[in-house]
Image (spheres, rainbow, N blue to C red):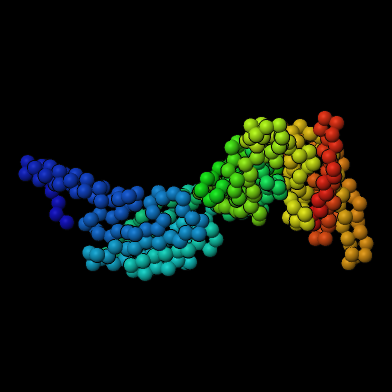
Length: 374
């Protein structure tokens, strides 16, 4: 190696030139070491890592990602494969990696945890020079798949102006739900739903006046994060122009015409209707469930729920267990909810017999019966 003396004028001049040259080389070297967050070797040493996966500082990476990259050997240099070391979050995973002179890859045996992760690759080139490249990426939090188990409604009879549509969606809890009322496949009304219990969403809507007579479809929409799914009710609903049949008055044609064009305001039925479940529907939860129903606004509903569980092949019933026997007051839209606890003895043959009657202003409804199965 050539050396320059700092004790002579000539040596001092050469030294200053050497210093300037050294500073310029250092600046070029520093700029070549940093590229997209990677620590890379100088252009003079020409050994880089390219096409890395996941990318530098990438976010929303899936937990099942693999880690890979290419050794750039375009300048003719080579990597000493035996010197390559791959670390994930500080753990040496080289033995489980696939490594060639041009390529490295590692597939974690289990999904990566949400959050930041660091990859570090250490290696030597054919000249024996040590190189280190490192970068980070972030794995997104896992999202549970959305599911809609049922969409039901209370429109067993045609709905007219002033009638209340009550729809219930059952599905993944802690999501955003809405009910879509599709009239004639052209007009879509989106009705926001509220989660009244985990996974049970209820929406109510008062039919406007005027109302075009037609068939309409009820669909449920559930979304969470970037996911959105739909589910349709098993039965469509029928819309009619009047709430009740027009009253015909024989006094004069003019009077008759007025009576035929001015519908009588709808009267909400007092008899309770359960909208969250249908007859003989299965109850999935073994820790209890919740009934949702519709009646006249502010009515008082008496609900009884009895569980019957056959055992020993059905020869013995652990039955007659009263789970609910109390009153519930409907809200201003006529909605009421009934939490039903699980019985002490339960199996796949457990049956729930449900009865409900409503009272409002001295009027008592007929009995609504519902049977559910575990």
